Amino acid sequence: MSQLDQFLSRAEQLLNRLEAYLPPPVPAPDWRLAKAFRWRKQGGQGFLQIVKHTTKLQFEDLHHIGMQKTLISQNTQQFVQGKPANNVLLTGARGTGKSSLIKACLNQFVDQGLRLIEVDKADMTDLPDIIDLIADRPEKFILFCDDLSFEEGEAGYKALKVALDGSIAAQSDNVLIYATSNRRHLMPERMSDNASYTHDEDGDLHPGETVEEKISLSERFGLWVSFYPFKQDDYLDIVAHWLATYNCSPEQISAARADALRWALQRGSRSGRVAWQFARDYAGRTQ
Image 1 (spheres, rainbow, N blue to C red):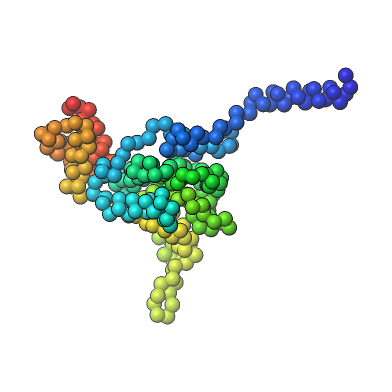
Image 2: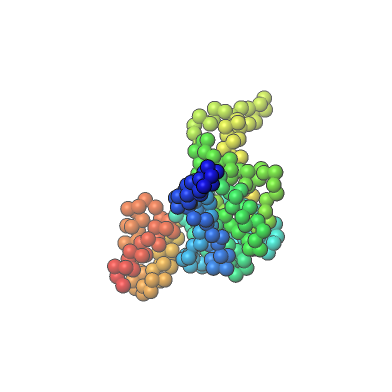
């Protein structure tokens, strides 16, 4: 055997060993099997993971956010019908139904071709790859970014700005971004930011570069939907709805009011999430 043959043989053996440590190729998703996906990483390679069990939330399960439901439903209806529609930023009080509304939206329009892809904040830099992957699909995709906020200097901040409105490539007609956040501008606002404001001779205020940068991302969302804390009666009404779904009788629902208020007091919040958590606890103890 010549030296060249020996070299090639050893090289082949080495490659065979290396292949054993490499991650297997990521299969393409079967688009027929799922209505929701998660963007995941494996060995540095991104792929769409099918979500086998999705929530069954419906619009009817979400109470006291009627205006918000109308805005989201109308925008999504336009989207699945191929009409112009906007990227959406849902902001406001925690536990008031921001992410639940997006999940219910999927169930409302899935038969019209809507699909949902959940993207973690840590993977925002992959948004161009995700959009390229689905750009030629016939379905309509919402990229869902939950509980989104950024600290200064994070790479995902710039990537999201570009994906929303800032790339040389036109935005795909079958992709929208729906994001939820407790922060209106998605970045922390500090007292020192006020020092960057200037005013002219007429007294008009002009934001400085720091403030302009912080509001520039949220302004790229065409539709802002705000959520507010619930009143006590609203909270109790939501509790009653969830207790009814767990087959509690009207007498049990009425008897649960005082416990529901104590539950909310202990958590310092009268939110839809707290109401649902109480209902699960109460129904589990009394059924």
